[in-house]
Amino acid sequence: MQDLRHLWYFVQVARAGSLTAAAANLSLSAAALSKNIAGLERRMGVRLFVRTSRSLQLTSEGRAVLDKLGSTFETIEETYRTAGQVSREPAGVVRLSTVTGYGKHCVLPLLPKFFERYPRVDVVMSFHDGRRGLTRQAFDVRINWGEPRERDKVALTLCRMPLIVVASPGYLAQRGTPRSPEDLREHDCINVTMANGSRVQWTFTPTNGTRRDPITVTPAGRLLVMDELDAVADAAEAGLGLTVSSAENVLGALREGRLIRVLEDYVVSGEHGLQTEVIVQYARRKLLPARVRVLVDFLVQELKGRDPLEVVSRTMGTRR
Image (cartoon, rainbow, N blue to C red; front, side, top):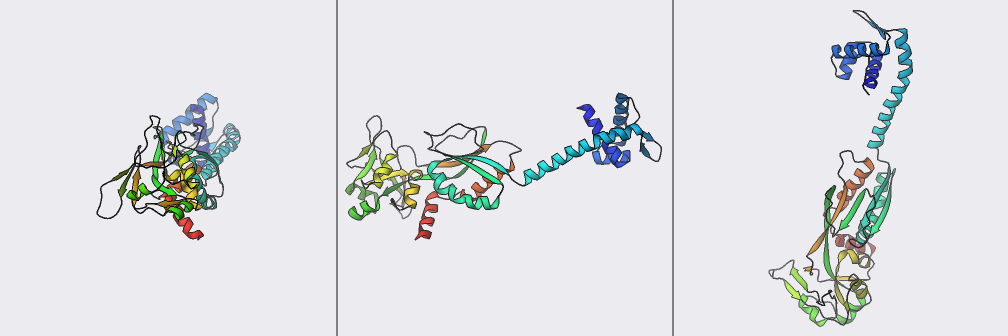
């Protein structure tokens, strides 16, 4: 590697035709550069330059060495230039892993805009169901919720995934729409039962008005769900009552009108906290590939701080 650097210095001196000019280009002193060239000549056993007080000329041996090396270093320089252009113009494949509901209903609709902006970037997209379905394959970018942040990754919060109350249009048409949490006592509520047999309580906190005290309800109904707790959303779709669900699980049903959100003026919490952060994670690298960087920047620009339910509501309003 030491000789390679000295050969590079030799090519620069030969191209510049002057030790002083080459030294300035290389950010070296003329004396240091002259010492390097002299050392190279000793190791090669030939004179490469004929030096006078006014000029620097290649010897025949020096010309032969330059002819051999010139094209090689030109190829290396072109490789660096090409790599720089590639890094400036994003291209290639990005592997994106995303939690299912959020990915389908918030990320997928954005991809046409992304592909139009970056025509040389392709995306391989994998969907998982949070804690139960997350694979540990090598992905460039992950969108998770309810997952701990990985210490070796950069993690940015996009939004929060709230709990909401939903019911089918048919159920609400038959039984009416509750206006306050207390009204739930007159409705069939689809609840879950934990391993110890206890039933989850729903706590509501008003988001407007003067009353700020939380209201806790123990929902009652003819159906209890255990084990596959996300099935409460399917049960609500079937018209079996009202239920509390993570927005993640019902984005598609809300978008398509199979479920309707009620009690929107209340923040809902269950046994495990108020809501969960949606985060985007990617490798902690100084030289992140441009194709990965532009996708991360795009997702943050388009999704950071945007309530997924507002995205669905806006789409539904446009459709009508």
